[in-house]
Length: 503
Image (cartoon, rainbow, N blue to C red; front, side):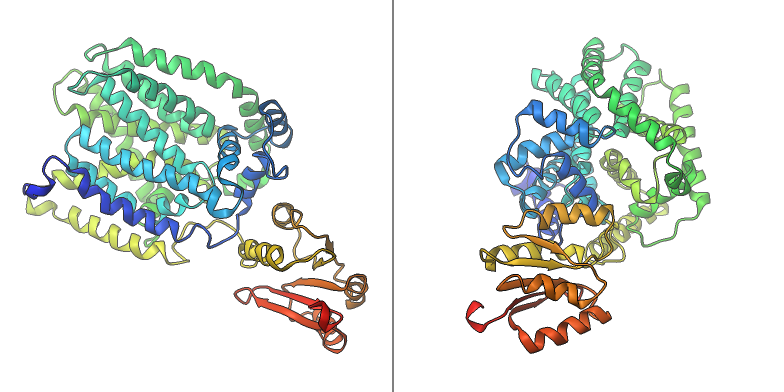
């Protein structure tokens, strides 16, 4: 490998900085591009969004247990603390996963540097910074980039404690405990990463420093996580009896195939045989290292591959029992995403002969498709909102900025379901004016509600329905249009008044 330019020698992090800025640019451009999605709103509801003000911790804990007895409550707790500083707006809340994602990227580079060389960290950072899957979750108000950060921090702290040339400091032990505890409280499946590192620690024996201290940190984290056992068992019981969920649950090979598809930015249809091949590779890797655990060799590579293989296999075993990973829940594997990037970077970096140059071309293809997929709707990870729900934050802000005392919002029934109820609770019930949900049975019910107010807002999506056509014809005769806003051709928000002076 060519030496770095003189200006960069001693400061290799300067090479990583442009990639970090690139990832930040991609993510920040999406912070306010869409309203909160249903899963985001469910989390915000657990964090106390309906209260619109900070709650004492005891009240927050009681509310969390009441509203969701099966979810890990680390992320809602973190969000409830964050919004006290930043507020409840879309950009304010989403800055939290953005910061976690940026730190995960930085720590991926640092882990690669400490394992081998800063070029390894740089290649891994390049893969993550151009991954549509990873970047998509940097502006998604859920815990997944935080999972990537905590898993990377866990691996880095463990490596610094047990294998690094320099002596470990107290901050590394504290970081190991913090990362392990956070993973246990953020998501149940992320416990597999902790278990994989602990198993590697036990298998590798006493031939490294501080054999007992990491075990003590893992034991303390396990004790702290026992507070969440009741919610874990409740969630497990609910998933086992959910017949609709079982229809979409992926088997072991299908999980790996779907994982590979998102790894290549959904540009290829991966055959199921590739999943079986990867599963055999994971098992074969473990067998290989088990038979050679006492041989001297590349300790960093052994550490990476054994932890990765064990964590992946533990996820697959857990899913066979819990039956929860569907194509839309491949995000549960986010703790393994940085480690995947480091392993791929290791493979690319170690190829020196012309026969293996294909690895470098594969890397180039992943980067190019990733840059394309980040801004391509079809290739993005599907977050599930319909088009008009994506604009609800614009609707809310428009009404707040131009609304007056005495106004009313007339909203149609739309396709009210659990998702829509969450949208209404967050965006419309918090408006400083009453909201009337008008029966779609006829235009008369709309007009009757409207005539009780001097000004009224009309929110409608079904522009071709007979009800809307009849309503529009009546309003053209009797009412004045004060404002009209077409929200990307998926909904119309109009402000009407019965006299021109009231506009």
